[in-house]
Image 1 (tube, rainbow, N blue to C red):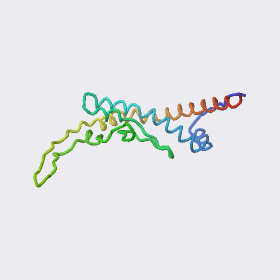
Image 2 (cartoon, rainbow, N blue to C red):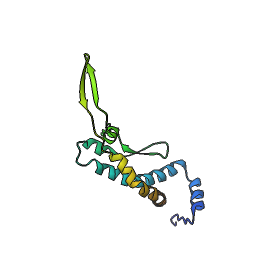
Image 3 (cartoon, one colour):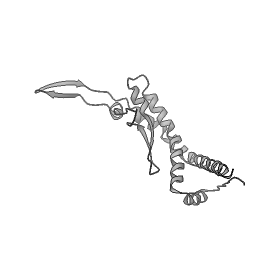
Length: 156
């Protein structure tokens, strides 16, 4: 039997085709596209943490998907082996900090923010916006190829 082939001529055809897909298929296509589109932000954010002591924060920068919705979070991950708890503090910095013990103030200093995350977003905003549409099309093509492979394996 021949492979499934899809010819898309415009946005209307793509929308009609998407409406016929299952919810899980739509989610898979969008999440795949968004993951690829988010790579420049992740790369730049990690580069902004080079030569700092926040190695675990640098490791934690990545993407996390939602199991039930086509959602993608990009940033410092906190689950499992990732320890991205300090992401907001390293990015924004802190004021002078202290704590009181037995009525005596103990100063612990402050952290100067390095804006690694803000810079990564500002530098890559245009590139990510431009690549999302292209990545959705490519993710859709990958989805069709996978569907063809599954169909061929079931026929044999």
